Amino acid sequence: MFAAYFDCPGGPENLYMKEVMKPDPGEGEVLVKVSASALNRADLLQRRGKYPPPKGASDILGLEAAGSVAGLGPGCSGRWKVGDAVMALLSGGGQAQYVTVPEGFLMPVPKDLTFIQAAAIPEAWLTAFQLLHFVGKVQEGETVLIHAGASGVGMAAIQLVRLAKAIPIVTAGTQEKLKATANAGAAAGFNYKNEDFSEKVLEFTQGSGVNIILDCVGGSYWEKNLNCLSTDGRWIIYGLLSGGEVHGDLLARLLSKRASIHTSLLRSRDKEYKERLVRAFTEEALPHFSGETSPRLQPLVDSVYPLHAIAEAHRAMEENRNIGKIVIEIPVCFKKGPLQ
Image (cartoon, rainbow, N blue to C red; front, side, top):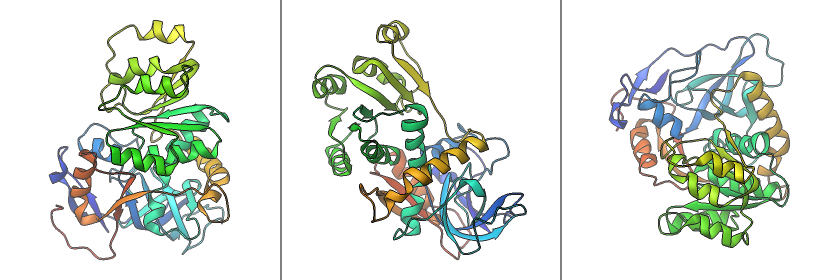
């Protein structure tokens, strides 16, 4: 089979199409013929040599995929059959023609969604669901500040906060992105480039601050985050786009508010944790992607690139051009050669 690949860490120009062995499903695994994958910042970090896959995971990029069941390994429970339309959370390997997946990491593609739309769900939505429910323990009526609100995780989090009957507010870097977050359900949005978001948050909450912060930015935001975090608030860090260095008296400020810092990564979690997360999301959130339920959840696809143009997809994400998810379509036939 063919997969997007790179031999040396570096820029998008290092990506190329490589012919590799088609994987065989092991005990309790399902072979999926991939129709679409999606791009995540973890893919960019891995390409740069800064985020290696967990031990035993595929070194092919791609943390999520949608497609059809093509084979079953020994010991599968019988839940899935060949031909089923599925989407999957992966530790790697999604940007290829085939990928093997533990059966507990699979979810059915919601009715009326295409494979392109379904590929935009697993990593972003499961990350947001985990941060809100497994880590943050969001409660009805709480206010949640979501940084990078127009990202894949951000747009998912806005909708999941609404589903939990809480109040989402966001930061983003352009008016276009803020408009998109408002359309997704954000109660307020602040442009971090020309506004002090902490002051705006305190104004919105009438001085009380937010109960939860979902933060993928890290070091440069620490002081403003603590300024607008409520007493007993939860600050959840799941990325470090601005780096991890903190200069100042963070601990004293944190202690004065009885606040807590939580950190979370999904890719490195163990199999049992991921299966529990997939099961909870399937039961509590997945039905809302179909038209029969209210509120309706909707994955937002920013753009679609064929696999041979994955280098351009990487460039688009590095330049923060996307609103929602960048999806990679896997064509049936390939030609060898560099990926531009």
